Length: 147
Ligand code: HNI
Image 1: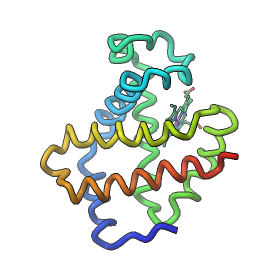
Image 2: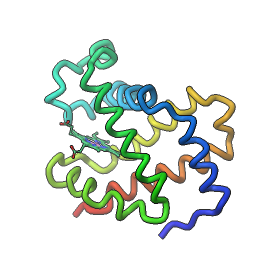
Image 3: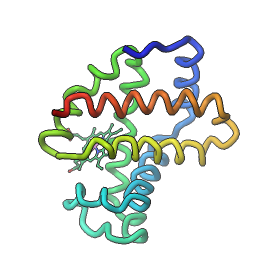
Image 4: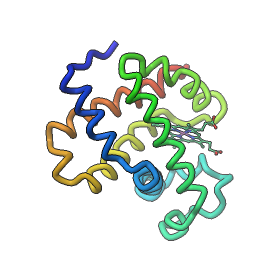
């Protein structure tokens, strides 16, 4: 199990408090789809997401970005059991959605970049290190039920 110092816990909470889910969620998912276009294949039901323009204007992408980011709130509130928190969601992504788990790292990076664009100097190197540790634990938890 991952150990968190008090400083790390307060840093994750402080970063998370500054995140505006309705902005950062859509922004992060759009980034993933544009920067890593092969991830589009999982979202066939979202309609036309075959160019940067259509991705930026797709309301389903925006809405799903919010769903993904809202889910992170559970990890912030359960830092000592992130794996357990995401066990069912990991199974869903493995068995039903068949998402390659490598993509969890990609979306984690896109979330960090979107957060950094928003927070600017508030996400200093120390805060970034802690935030990325947090997201890598989330990505690992999302991969935990794969077989
Ligand atoms: Ni993900 C559905 C959370 C990464 C593809 N995803 C969900 C749902 C949540 C969620 C919550 C809704 C589940 C439900 O309906 O019961 N996804 C997360 C989280 C991460 C993540 C917390 C990583 C931090 N998902 C990814 C990645 C991909 C992905 C990296 C693909 C590249 N997810 C999907 C797809 C769906 C989905 C596809 C179904 C969407 C739909 O509405 O049909």
